[in-house]
Length: 275
Image (tube, rainbow, N blue to C red; front, side, top):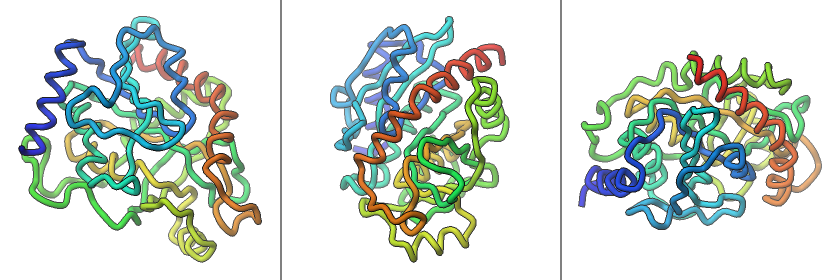
C-alpha cells in the first residue's frame, strides 16, 4: 500500500467521525497536552484508533487527536508526536503532519521542549523558532516523492511562516509572556548531546536544541502548510550548566511553563479568529 493510500484511509476514518475539520492545528510537545482543557471538546480520537497513525511512546504525550472550540474558533490539537528515535521511519514521523493537510488544515503550530544553548535563557522560558538547522541525519522527503502533496524539490527559504509567527509572537507578548527568538537545531536523539556538540551547535548559530519539529516543518512546507513553532526551554544544554540531564527535568519545566503558554494560546486563538 502506498503512503498516500494510507493517508487517505486515515483521512476518511476521521472525516466520518468529524466531517468539518478545523483550519488550525497545534502539535503539543512534552507536558503541554493540557491545552485541551481550554477548549470545549467536540471529539477526542485516540491515535491508536486512526489507521496507520503512529503511536507515541514518550511520557507526557497523551496520544489523542482532539477537536474543540474556543469562542467559536475550531481548533485541532495533537496531544503528542512520535520521534525518529522511537524506531519510526521518517515517513511515519511526518504522517500526522501530512494527514492534517489532507484534512484541510491550513496553519500548523508546532510546540516542543528543548534545551537552551543561551546561558541567559533559563528553564521555563519560551523561544519563537525563526529558522532551524537539520542535524538529524535524515529528511522525511527522501524516497519517492508524493506529487499529490508537493514538489520533488520544495522551497525552504521561509520554513517558519513570518505572518503566522508574527501573530503568535504578538499574542504571547499581549498575554504577558516574555518570548525570545532564535534558531532551533534538530538532532535525532535519544541520548542528550555532549558538551562538545553543544559548543559546535552554538558556533553554528543555534539557540535551542531538540529531537523533534524539524521533520514536521520540512513535510509541512512540502505540502503547503503555513508553519510556525515555539520551544519551551526546559533545561540548559550539556556544558551550559553542570547539572546532568533527564526527561523528568524536561517534563517538570514544561509543567511550570504550562500556565503561561495556555494564556498565550488563548490570546492567539482570539487574534487568529479576527484575522
